[in-house]
Image (cartoon, rainbow, N blue to C red; front, top):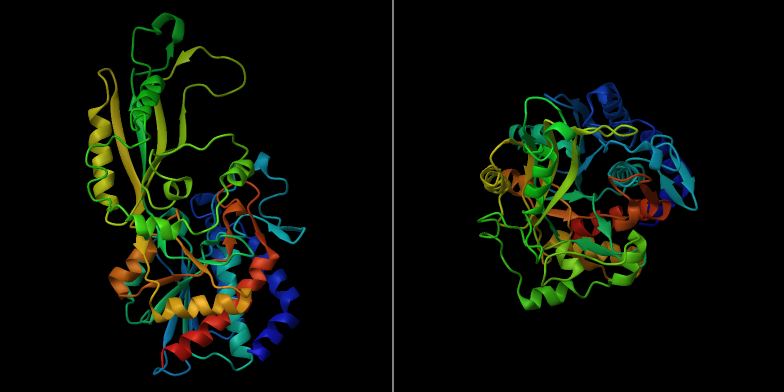
Length: 456
């Protein structure tokens, strides 16, 4: 590994500058006005993968944004690692809360500020540079396939189609993903589970036009008031979700399993201080960490209606809308939960309004074993790099493709993330530590070496 480490050290400035160039491309998959930029980003990823030594690199068209695929097969008899990542990013709004423009990356105090720096350009690009270091020094110990998509932030619908149509091309022994976080830079950890997701939009429509609040107020249903009341009713006083059947398939963790998860260091006072809050809130009977990882949730992600411009306008809006997401735990199926929500939400609508529920996207929860060869290789690689054994943790986010990889390809995934929960992903001032970026590039080749050796 000495020559690999030497290559990384000699090229670390170039590795950083290449990432900054990638971050300058506004590859926002959710907004059609960025379509050309998303395509440009895919071409840039293709070029960088070719320069790293990958072969058969191609930009694969889909009905949406393209997928970039490449591989390096050194010996069909050796194990194969399938690396997955995404080059698309979240919308940067609200722009006025950024301290620097989201697509003009700034490195300050060892931290890269830019949209996509941690989610997921900085993390998937670690693999491109790690592969370069192994290939260029003749130290690639097993086969590698790399698939980087452009629609993760909008549900990966076309990637699912691509995976099902290319099972032989994507055949491997394990999937490696860096799109999650560690506990801290001095407390390495490996994520062993993710929550699923059901995402939808609701609309409440009342009168056939906006009304004067003095003339009609108090006499007709106000869609904004109604929507707020309906949303408020989705939780009880103990913060449990009130949708009938919502918890029917939730598997409760044993006391021993909860105790094991509780071993991860967590300081609730520091947690609140970091967020600028004076109290936490969530489902009764569970800790803050449990609420954010092993319990299902329902949250409003956006709500609007009526007049929101400068000054006053005394109006009753004719309609109100909201975007709602539900994080799901293993055994909860996104389609089933979406239907439960839709049926319930329509049932609780009062007379005088019409309700529409529009599903957007979803995905299933996933749990990965800690006794597999791949997990042991990942654990040893992190221990080599950080000098201490990583702690297995559960993540609260969702990577829907993980469950698909298992269902379609029969592959388990190692969630080999190097970000931090404090990286502000999906928020203004997203950032990623230069330390984390370089540490990932250093650690990934160690995983390949251990995985190849342990697979013999």
